[in-house]
Length: 434
Image (cartoon, rainbow, N blue to C red; front, side, top):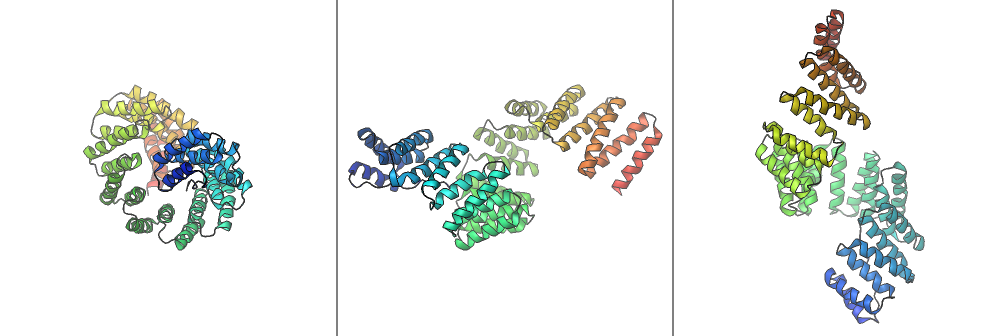
């Protein structure tokens, strides 16, 4: 958890004290005005710059906060320098400048090796790096935080998340349970436990965990959203929708919640409400292509070819390598009697799949290219498509796709007058479907 430490008090400066009092009352906008006055009067005062940095950070002015913390450090914060570095690290973290945040947290720790919260936030920042080396370093750092404070629930939660990201779900769950022993009302630990339980396939237990958390924090939109997600995974769409709607009453513009709400309405074939949810999601985040992709699916399901095509194209405009959008456009064109356009879209989807090493999607692209060529009576072009799809599907052990390819190959070899191969494909097909 990112938490800016309270400012050091200087009892000899009444204006500064007034700003600190406002800050501690969480009147951050008013505190900001006061600290700006102090800095104007005493531009070389490190404590004033430090407090100004805190107020700026709490009012969302992170770039300015970083400058203020740097000035405070430059003017020699003395014994408060570790806190200045710690808060500077928080500002870098919230600005998504992870490398700078890591370096600054390490400086805070070097100046004060007993600053447990710096270890915690350093571990949290390292955990956001994609490479395993950083995540393993995060484990070591968070373990140091727990040596300094064994009941630190933030460190226990963060350490559990790292273990979960590395695939050690049992260790992650043990740490979340430890956090709950330290604080039985730690709703973050309930949410984190539920995520792990869901990954372990224990969906009912995950739902039970989240319902406990809801009783403790009924107005926490994150908990309500996660409960909706787990209910959706259990195909309890009506109940999931109920919780998503509760979450949206608290956070009306939550893109993920609106997106999932649309998905559950779509699963219920309530296309009107699905469309409304996706339209709200797009309004909340118009640069996210997945909103356009899913509303396109609704238009496709309701036979609105033009709007479906326009929305898939918008998704591709936002993300040219959106393989699913290219793939679905191929299906859309083919379903409306435009095989040549369908082939172009599927070939694009295939090229992107290969670049992204998405082998399963590539196998599906080959399969549908084969079907289209078959429908056009271009059997010699269809044959290699199905053979390539079959080869990938067999490696991936995708039984359904393997069977579908054998089924197509029976007819293709028959059309090409290779009866021996046709019979061979029929035997292979029967082995799978029996």
